[in-house]
Length: 407
Ligand SMILES: [Zn+2]
Image (cartoon, rainbow, N blue to C red; front, side, top):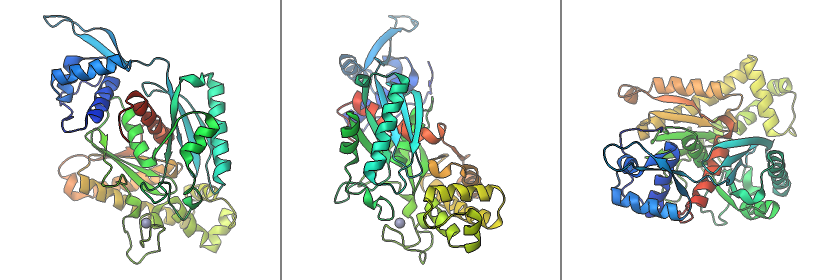
């Protein structure tokens, strides 16, 4: 058995569906566990655990897998997830690069593939491409479609907009009226759920860790910057489900207008598109990049990172400045939430992860208030580029496994 931490998870005060999901999480991360250990680790009563386990057993989500050693009386039965040959797919609907993962019912990654990012392509074109990539993955892995519980999509976007969709007038405006779930369901014949990409990154980090941290933040950078906040093992969503939008915290009150309506947001100085905009504004640098206004942003960003890595002074200065702004936001998060762990995930870090990572570490090391109290770890996500895709698959698994859980 793994994950035998002695401090119980405080599951009291959650809704019954959340408690059920959290108990399932405990069984999943433990591999095998008895009812007594579940009660000890969850701080729930044995009667409550017995009732939840009875429900999980009758729903076929959990099976009895054997017996633990006796400690005097009857040998306690061990429980584990019922894999049952079911699968889930997770994918990132990402500007730069889409990652697709195929997972077993316990969240283990079985296979992975990549597809071209959405860029500024028409949504129908990008969705056709994604559906074809999902088909190709299933064919390659010889997976029966009937075994797929569903597809989880990690994408940017504000919840609760008038259209209920993605709103980003600088890039996602074309996506706003697109019902991505329905469109992908039509193309793949599979159930589709969508979740915020930063929250997916946090979930992916949580699910891919044998002993996940209960309190941490996953900072996700793709076209924009956001973060998924995990408090006591659950995503913190805030009043409208939009918690974690650090990309729209003000860095410079007199700075450039941001698509959100404010000025000088972090995204206007530290995101890949901000970096690209700054790089293209310099004629000499633009010439060294060998691009023009028509070159896709992701390609410009890739070439820019190449120049910076080769020591181009101006490219390096632009990247360092962006990383310093980013790092300041990470330092503010650490102080606000008293964090001892921050993980970085997302395609925006690909090729630039070390620069952002080192800047954040330097900043945190200089964050005197918390530094004096406990160590603070900043690192890249365990699962790398596919972290958010794994998290999206876990959303499917959690919904599939616990159908009463609300989003
Ligand atoms: Zn903004």
